[in-house]
Length: 552
Image: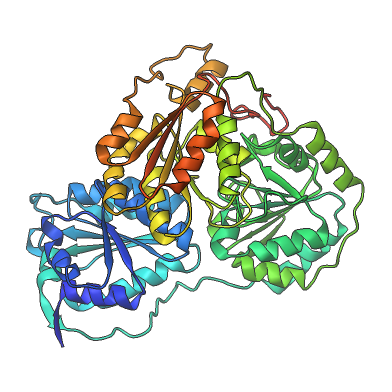
């Protein structure tokens, strides 16, 4: 059957199970949009291409499916770049389709031409420029396969207008066969035996779990392992929800803004089992003093991560879900002892807490969101102090419920990501916890949420500052607040102008009523919480310091 390239693309998307696309039309993608007009695929028109990329990212993280975004050539494609980089850093399965000028004009500085495959080469798992319409179906199939297997990541497919607008006989490309790309699922038997022996010999084990646990769906295996060994579990920011935060063995987050007891446990453990984590600098602090007494076992699906930042004594390459199952077969239950007693003593001595002084505190806001939602909401965040307070004071017990920009640290991520989460989880309560700086970077997506009747809640922790930068200026630059104070719009009236609900809270008494109203609304809600201006995120390890040198 003869089909246009655009029709082939739509047919391939259906075959991949795509039910929603986040995008923004333009000249180079007009054939594709014309084909979408009759397609049984939902299209969410965002108000900026970056919003489309972040929404596709949030959709993917919440659903476990591949997120899809679509933009035109030139500036449309380059507006996707931050969102693609964000997905790359956090291992999010996403396919970004971009339009391109006709093949004959490539490389001629044509109107709205940009070398988007060249630009995104360092921030994609793979990318394609489709030069022949007969390669399109195979390329799309490969793109989804690459994005979703092994260590997930974004793939970009650039489609010139003559390819999307041309015609050919459509043929199914058959199964994907990529020589040289064969992700490893199972761990090496010899390495597994070494790891099991080291674990059983250890007296002070700690499990360090990263986002790979969530991505691989290995949360049940992790819980089983921790309970078998009675090993405390600390997670990275990306790993939150991969282990129940209310479990007695949970240490919460480690690193620069980790709990004291998590950092102390890592410093004193004799074995560190890293599962789907990459030893990021915000986790390790001073690398030469990270887990100095520990034998380090590192399990990861990406061999490039093994030993990249911290040398591993026992490296194991494989999908963490399968490797943990293999490991569990080789282990026996351990009995509680002095290590478990010491962990519990630290947790009692150094709880995460804050001072109440009658004014509205950000920690109060987070805890009240947790209470009002019963801990069952899907939470996204922007990047800054509010992100860390959320990690501390909202207890995550399920995977894929905490969705945030970890690696790239993208301000403006949370709100469009929340739109993607709400599309993926239409019957669940979704909150974007934001700062008054971050929210303004993609606030135009309020129009998207209103137009598509997506009841996303936005909780702005409004302190009139770029809060995290101000905190560093206070602690390390003698309170010289250089260009971090903000003059903000009236967020309530702004929300109302878009057709959303706007609410303002200035004291603790108004906190619960506003949140209870918000979760009952059928429209998007923007809550403006006027919080203590110079509240800091504590505890904090100064940059470059070891994890046991903590400001509190």
